[in-house]
Image (tube, rainbow, N blue to C red):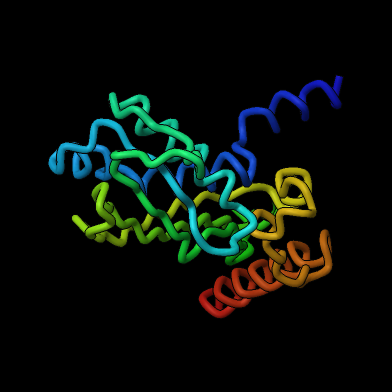
Length: 196
């Protein structure tokens, strides 16, 4: 029963890939409208650079443009096309971890998770002239249970999805007990000094 409950709860928390996709979507939020203003209703997409997440960016860009009525083509090196080309370079795409905290004095540790995406996009006409260049970014932040972080990371071959967790400071159950003891001592000292 516990395993089923944990599986259901984990399914409600977005994976690192889903959080990264949200950051990409934020970075692309105004791109379809901008492309349409240049008359780009049919374009080729090329993702440039050496980022290991280029395939994911291309998939997301193609999807969002298709949803907004822009026809996307794959580059065919043998054809001399007259389509515009959208060249996208990922400047940054990663998921990293921030501060570690507890919601109460006692309770499970939570870690801040940050997905960042920064893209440089250039629209070229059929002759190769630059029509527009824009740099956009998106950031998504949430907090997850420390114990869930390893499960949500994703494949080890995609290092951009697997940020390093901060060092596990504190001694698990010992830390809240010490904090509770200090608070109890302070309350005792406050009331004992008022009684005198």
